[in-house]
Length: 273
Image (cartoon, rainbow, N blue to C red; front, side, top):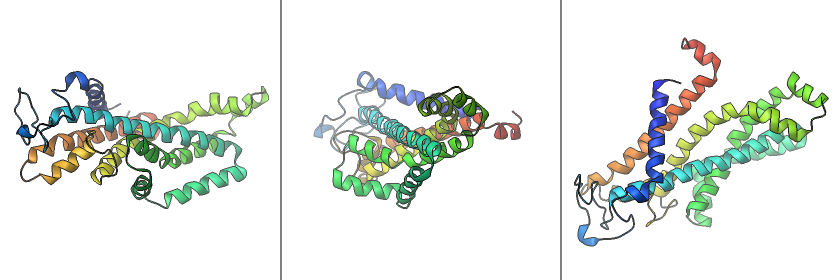
């Protein structure tokens, strides 16, 4: 794996560590208001190293706790989409027939609607919450995994090792679980890495629109929303959540690129690897 992917991995690991250790590292309570301290400028080494927001809440504390929410939404939604998509893709590619047609047509219908538009419509009905956000972003992302896995299974189902497993009396479940699933995991891992980056951006976008994580619970998206309202008076509020979103998403894309290059021998050969 190249140096950029390794650097991206270190950034993502650092973000996860900061999120996990947020209660111990945060300078204060992320939701405690202090109107006397509102819009305090950053003071390195003091009580509010990144300043305070419009309600006097410590920005550094909200940034650390917001990392927990944003990363949990990103990884959980992708995990849900991956489980559903991989399962349906295996079944669709293996059994084919009417089941394959139904699943793929359902995927076509879903792809006709932009993900954010569909998410906005569903969240407007269900209400904004962490669980609803994970469910919406997870359910809307299954088709990508299903199509990739289906294509791989269609190519693998006639291979000799599958025929040998059948000859030895292996059932469908055993073949899918022990022979086909391990072979489809590498491309799925690459797709999942890119998907986490897109999901974090989607969470930030929905929170920016007021349909994601609602205050006082901090997330990078709703922090950015509030910061833009006071950009002229307190421009320092935009920088922390904006930088964290940018670095995390960029790092995940670098990891995805590195994994794709490492897993695809054709790409490696063109780079002299």
